[in-house]
Length: 242
Image (tube, rainbow, N blue to C red; front, side, top):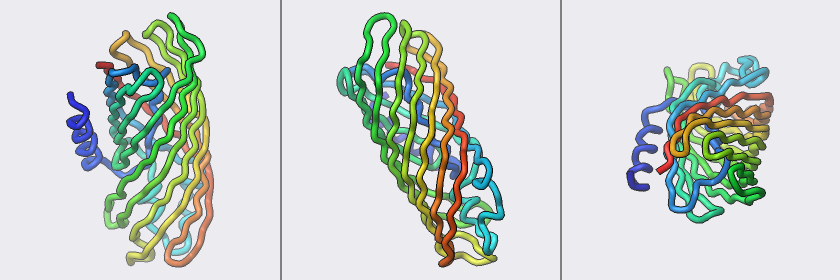
C-alpha cells in the first residue's frame, strides 16, 4: 500500500468514528527502520476518573460541552509510520475523529540481539467533535511530546515505558440549558505510558496504557470553570511491518 493511499484510509476511518479523545501513543520499542513501513490497526478507549466524569462540574446550565468534547468510550484506531533514516521516522494516526501526525527521533543505547533506545517525538493533532443527540459540535487542536525508553528483544518482544505531555484547545457550539452557546477549553495533560508487543519479526500484537493527569480551563457561555483529574487510555492493536 502506498503512503498516499494509507493516508486516505486513515482519514476515511476518522469520518466514520466517534468523538472521544482516546489517542494512544503506540510507540513501539524503536522507530520504524529505514525505508520500511509500519501499518497498525486496533482500538483505544478513554476512561475519565474523578472530577473529569462528574456532571456537577458542568454547572451552571447542564452544558453538553463536557459530554461532547471530553467523552469516554472506545474508538477504532489506525496508523502508519515510515522510516526516513536509521534514527528518524514519520507517522500518521487516526483515533476516532482525531488525526495526529508525528515525527520521532531515536537515540540508540545498545545494539545486538537485545536492542535498547530512547525515542522522543513531536506530534501535532486536530479533529472534530460530531453532534450527538443535539449536544453540539466543534473541533480540537493540540500538540503532544512523547518520550520513551524502548527495548527490542530479537524482533519478537518489545517493551516501552516513558511519559507523554500535551496541550489542547477545544471549541464549538454546545447545548447549554436548552439552547446552543459558544464554549471553549484549554487543557494540559501529562502522565506515564507503558506498552509491550509480542509476535514475529514482521507481525506483532500490541497493548499499551497511558495514565494522564488533565487540567482544563473552560469558558462556557461567559462563565469560567476549571477542573482537573485523571484519565486512563488503554489501547490494543496489530502491527504489520512491510
